[in-house]
Amino acid sequence: MADFTTPLPQAGGAASSATGPGLVARAKEMLPAYATRIKALSTSFFNPLEFSRPTSQTEWVARVSANAFHFKLIYFCFFAPILVNTMMSSMWLQIGALVLCGAWGYAYGVRAADEQILGIPLSKSLTCSALSVLVMLLTGMVNALFYTLVLFSLVGMPHMSLHNMPSAADALDAVEMQTLAPG
Image 1 (tube, one colour):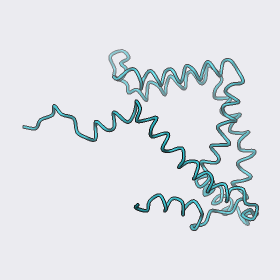
Image 2 (tube, helix red, strand yellow):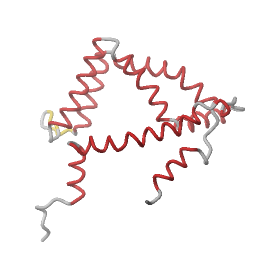
Image 3 (tube, helix red, strand yellow):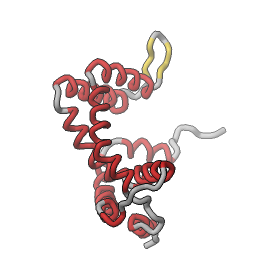
């Protein structure tokens, strides 16, 4: 008969790293790596010699998808302040953001078990997602998100369209290979 009283090593590590000082320590370790990655990406991102007009629609689509994936960290750094500024522009948007953060924090930080509505067990992610959609519709967050996406696309889409597709020998690849090297 197997002994199920002691948890597996994987289970203990996953539970302890989700909360507590492990999360803060991991964030402090990741910040220099993100700063290095942004520095390596920015040399190609802002280089005017790497811009040209696409010759066809298929090349345009390929450029947009390749650049969106390759420069996602820099695009996020441009998108996040626009989103925060938009979310802080109205009291209802601020209330909606607080309700969403509170609901998700309560579900995953305080409450350990799944919810039950009329005796039917619902997962935390399903319950929080349904509540999030309702709150976003009631407070106008959907309109604010749409406005932010349109405003960001005025800056992001020209860059994604005109920047040449990243090559295999990009500086970011060299930085990533250095982090994988032993030693």
